[in-house]
Image (cartoon, rainbow, N blue to C red):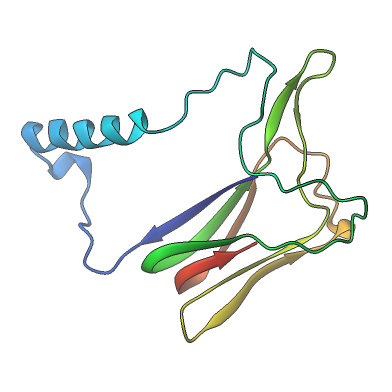
Length: 146
């Protein structure tokens, strides 16, 4: 699964692209291109590998496993997006795999822990290719656990 977090840090630039000069936009584009070059290239047509994180498969669906992401500093977070890992199946086309039947999203700081969301098998999230989008009131977080 891939986790996307909508966040902003205190003191970060808050602007719209309309406010930037052409030179500033070109600089921002160069920064984005540099970041994109560091990402792994992936081709869904090969049928090899998958996108996203998957744990080692477990024989028991009730096996608990946590993934913790350290954000490096405190961010104001108001949305979490969990995207199923996908792969190409020659017979079925693109399919998701490894998305949990149930999970919780926790987020917090060194001194706080917030339960952002909790899902169980009864919520019928599977099967799915679409992301699970969880919006919440803004919270400070320096880490996230799923």
